[in-house]
Length: 242
Picture 1 (tube, rainbow, N blue to C red):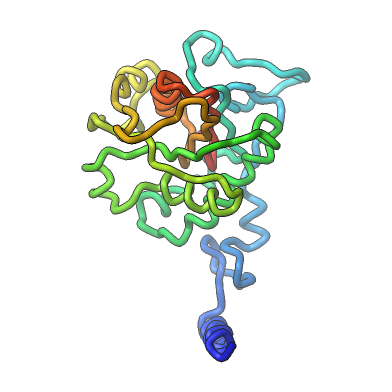
Picture 2 (picture 1 turned 30 degrees about the vertical axis):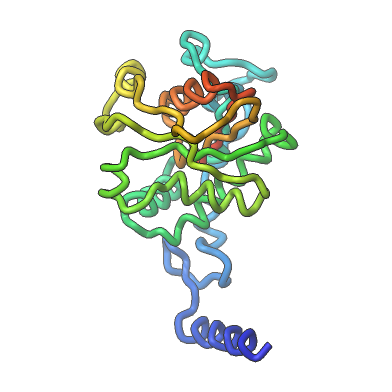
């Protein structure tokens, strides 16, 4: 009890001397927040209508469920890839700072956006057996110092009580996907992943985790490996959709 009181007192003192501020604008915020209400309001939520397969939003008067042309004309191995936010403005800036700026504390905010994806009807209430983060190649992970998908998966695992396991490994170092189009991304990722030797996903319902969904090529290739190994289903969730 004494240690707890001392810890609480220290936390109060730190908050007094160094009050928490908004990551974007520097305004004072509550201790458990990372953005002020004004900046939080600039985070763009994805709303219907959107593709049921990849969550690509569309403008217009579409009222029913639909699959976009990009998904309809290629083989996609995940059952659905869900994101709650657009990777625009503040969301993109926060994820970039977390991923490339080594501001690892921002994982908590990004994980909150990721958790929002689980409220989507495609994932809400769905039984999940294991959470699998999209892996980085060992060389890329040494360069970055961490795998952002693994950090997010661990936070989500704690919140929803589903184990997170690194069941996939990246065996081929690929060039960055950023400047590649969809066809080039698919070719770039071919046979880049495999199941770890001790891993077993047979008859499991898998949730793939990554930070951002762009074309879905990475998630689809990971899902292909998992399903080939016997996974019943593979859904994906990301913090944002490019």
